[in-house]
Length: 189
Image (cartoon, rainbow, N blue to C red):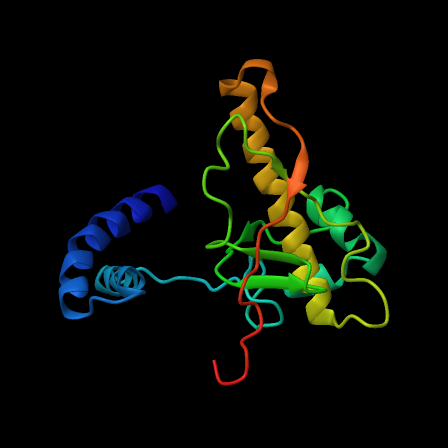
C-alpha cells in the first residue's frame, strides 16, 4: 500500500542521502538520493504534472489550470481558491521570483525578516486586476497568480501568528511590499 511504500522510501532515502551528499555535495543531492532509494526498492512512480506550479510558463506543471481562470478573476481566485468552482494545482513550489509591473514582486529570499512578530505590518496585497490588460502576457498572468496567492498566504500565516501570540491581535496594517532590489541588472554590472 501507499503508506508502507512511503515508509520504505523514507527509510532508504535517509540511508542514501548522506552517501549521495558525500559524492555530490550540491543542491538537489537529496532529490537524487530519493530517486536512488525509489529505484533501489523498485517502486514505480506515476508522473502527474497538474498538481504543482513553480516557474511561470514552464512545461510539466499545472499552468493550464491557471490559464483557464478568466483573466478578470486571476488575482481574486489566487487569493481565495475554491476547488469546487474550478480545479487548480494544490501545491505552489515557490523557488522562483515572480514580478508584475515592476512594483509587485515575490521572492522567497526577499521576504522581510521578522515578519512573525507582533509589530511587523502585513504585506500590501496587490490590486485584483494585477496582470490584466493588453500590455500583459500570459506569463504576466501566471506571475500575477503567484504574487497574489503568495502574498495572501503569507498574510494569512502572519495573522495566524498574531491571533495566537499578540495581545490585541498585533499590527494588522497592510503597508509593506516584498522588496525587489536589483530586479534589473545594470549594464556592465
